[in-house]
Length: 282
Ligand code: PMP
Image (cartoon, rainbow, N blue to C red; front, side, top):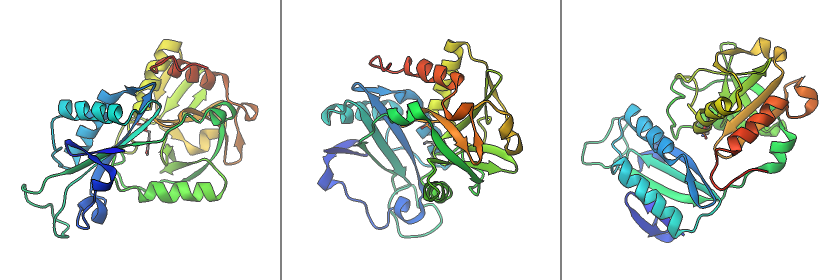
């Protein structure tokens, strides 16, 4: 397997991380997960723009221009013959003696990207999943796709130990998002989700879902959903690059649309798939 290290493609065995890399010591960096369908990179521009935004927000200078990075990612997909899968990419502030303060301008950011297996969870997409709510203990810059994921990891682990697929996080009585997903609730045919502000990651799948709602004629509204109102909604679903549109059939002790994916969620699954390369409709 070839790995992208900054602007070079190197063998897996030559890709080494320094013990003083700031990503390793502080989680001082950012990342992206990108999906490849049918050999085509889905929403590469959007992912690269979000990477650039995350970098800017934490004052990291990317090792090359976005257009060069896109070319390198395409090469990476091509030399590794990725057909259906994913690309993981991360950028850290670079290598320097441990110190909270940023290193000098001579220290360059370190970028790596490599293929990861990713398969559409078709069975779960058809059956739906269960989730639980947990307090959102994360910081207030969840819009940055930071390597610091402790709040997300602890929530996902707790959910998994309770046999739940996802932890849905609540901040000040409002549902923000899942530990690695965006969250939506449907009422009287309208899809509601948290506004794209500092409390959630502006998911690329979320952006595509808004587009899919447009195509399917489904009304869409950004609004903070109160945890205490969750029982008033007809359907609930979550989304991410790897799970696409995933129905949630149970959330805590609430059951939605008779424990089966609801009609609006199913229409959106279809509308979303129609946006994917390679005719990914089933
Ligand atoms: N929120 C969080 C906290 C996430 O980790 C993710 C997945 N990276 C998402 C939302 C969904 O983002 P995307 O659709 O870009 O994968």
